[in-house]
Image (cartoon, rainbow, N blue to C red):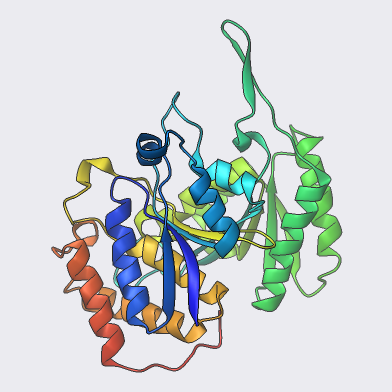
Length: 343
């Protein structure tokens, strides 16, 4: 059986890191049928749409997407492709695990954090308008449905994966209604999971606490904008956005993506690091139930980082994108490893 997957290469370095991840995935022996689709500026030039119907129809069919970075213009231009896809397919849970790779020097070794971010509403949705010239209003809309749904997702993940603690992150001391609703829903759901310790921290204090001691946290549950900011902050603990994966999950559809930018300044040079894309693809493999293949790639990836001979320039090596991918494939094929107990 071949898995049908919508492949969105993106722009900038997107096609390079996506192609590297695809080569490694196919080297596992798992069969894929890739439906390649464009989004963003490249799609507009070809179809006259930033989010073409061909792409939406493909995801409707496959229910699984693997997506490279797409440039989002700042202060103008078209709306975020990521936000549009999340809303269209009700991808309400943004899931980002934060774990170190071997021999990447950081201030904090052995970090193991899970960030769960509500993905469809709140201030990050970008619902705004100009009231009068010089006055702009942005709307932060929070619903009980979305808050209960994301809290349930977080606690279910914690139970299934034996995580011990969840902190709900908020600013309810100021936004008493909107963030207050988020907290009330989190508290209500937490009562169904007595084996999981539940706590609450104000978002600005959380930033300080994370920098002082990230080990005090296990899982963070956040609304949309706070999750966007804190997930990037936590990426710094393990070496930056170029090394961390991301998943956008709904009840019927999932899109897995590298969370870093499109880096147009190095596009086409074959020097970009495909690690974030590859780790996102590992989340996709687990979503598909291909745990053995995911574990084989993860073990090979860690071996490449441990040996340090074929790393890309951003992490102190000299290898090209394609050489890095070749090295992971060679490491994967050189040894057989058992399937892990943990997802």
